[in-house]
Image 1 (tube, rainbow, N blue to C red):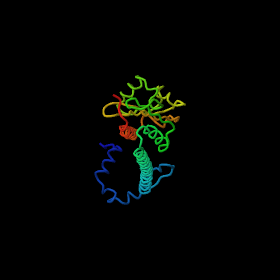
Image 2 (tube, rainbow, N blue to C red):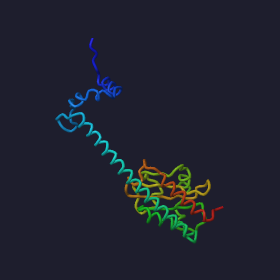
Image 3 (cartoon, rainbow, N blue to C red):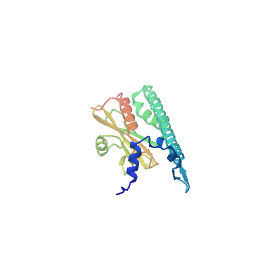
Image 4 (tube, helix red, strand yellow):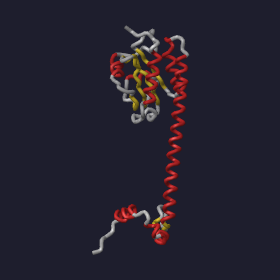
Length: 218
């Protein structure tokens, strides 16, 4: 009986016998395969060169993406450093909330930023208003910053125009939630639900650390 060779059998044979084409060089030179983008046939050697070129192109594209991401991350790190320097230079702790918001608007090109505090001693004003018990409970229950579409959150009412997407970042002192930082954008993809929150968590920790200079509320 004659066994019918499957493509898998042939592939396995060639993998297990890497010297096959070295021992049958004339066969290698004579074999042709279909061109991937044409109707004509090409040699195995030419097809291998095309495969290597495609792989090289894919690697170049991947490297370009990584380089772009690295450049973006470096820019973010520099902006964070500059923002921290500004906060450290503030002499009057009562002015810290304003500097936190202004720095985020200027350094990170965020369209809308709101900061509300309820666990620190601040005079009545824009940083202490509109923080009812429902909002405080919602923020306290966040285990990580919220990032995604505006689902009719009440905090979106702090902006003149309701954002399409937003990030909600809790502000903590020790184990207590003392406020919230809200970043808004008219772009629905600016704060997408599948994006990482590492940057937002860092912003929250740094803002929280700066605000420890304000006295707490007994």
